[in-house]
Image 1 (cartoon, rainbow, N blue to C red):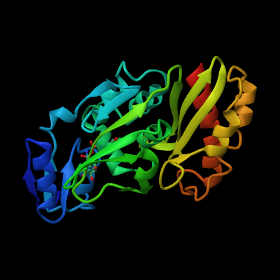
Image 2 (tube, rainbow, N blue to C red):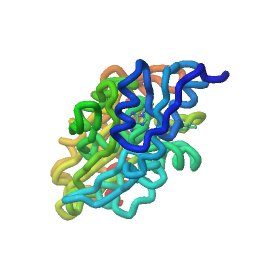
Image 3 (cartoon, rainbow, N blue to C red):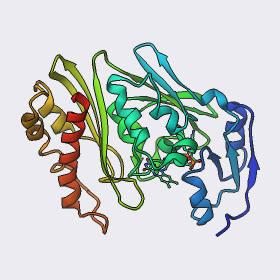
Image 4 (cartoon, protein in one colour):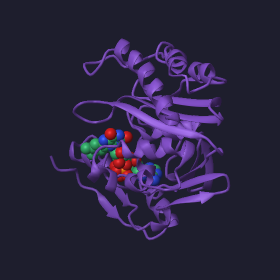
Length: 284
Ligand SMILES: Cc1cc2nc3c(=O)[nH]c(=O)nc-3n(C[C@H](O)[C@H](O)[C@H](O)COP(=O)(O)OP(=O)(O)OC[C@H]3O[C@@H](n4cnc5c(N)ncnc54)[C@H](O)[C@@H]3O)c2cc1C
């Protein structure tokens, strides 16, 4: 099917883009188009105006900042996946980006587009939540910060206000931390049936603080707080102890998807398996 008719603008600056998003009714930003274009073609989205962000090159970066790393909203997944700055706990983000779709999707799709789209099975939301990232929004009232924990409100719903663009994120990467992302892929779409991101702060081989998140099981990514507590103080060289600590990860989840792709019971069981694998991969 062809998309319904829309007005199309390609602003040269962020301010122009925000103006183009706010001055008419029902305008949508277009970044990599990897989620929006299929919606347009199916007429599930019928915006009156598309605001193409392609010229906002200044939002395409992965750079070092004090104590961590910053990622621009228009950075393609492939550049996040390949960044040499995402080491230690930052591996959770690089591995989540590398796990997205295929080469074409990773070259076109963007960091900000994925987070703003907030697909409940997307990979990057789990990683930014585990890294306790600060997300940067720019809109008609200027720039504001949103904690990743406050950003994802539900399926395809975020804390972004009308006319706001997600321009980037900042995350601290603690010295000596370790990170990983693993997912059980849906066989056809490649999206996460269950994906787990792990960011571990270590004292030698002992876990001082763990941050574990899951995507794909419900309407938004969640912290696995009980498992984080169970891992704190544990020697992560002991695979059996790690398995034991992660064994209840899925059991505490509420409102787990139960559909033809996997029962709630299966997704809960796989959450524990993916949590174990993510922790062992991070320290392995
Ligand atoms: C075949 C295929 C396989 C895929 N597999 C996976 C997968 O395994 N895992 C996964 O996580 N994702 C997957 N995706 C989705 C992919 O990650 C998309 O790149 C991402 O969801 C959207 O990013 P985009 O830049 O393409 O955004 P677009 O499609 O351009 O936009 C998506 C939405 O976000 C809004 N938007 C875009 N940028 C911004 C911004 N900076 N600020 C505010 N709003 C913005 C748009 O208005 C639109 O509503 C897949 C997509 C395809 C086509």
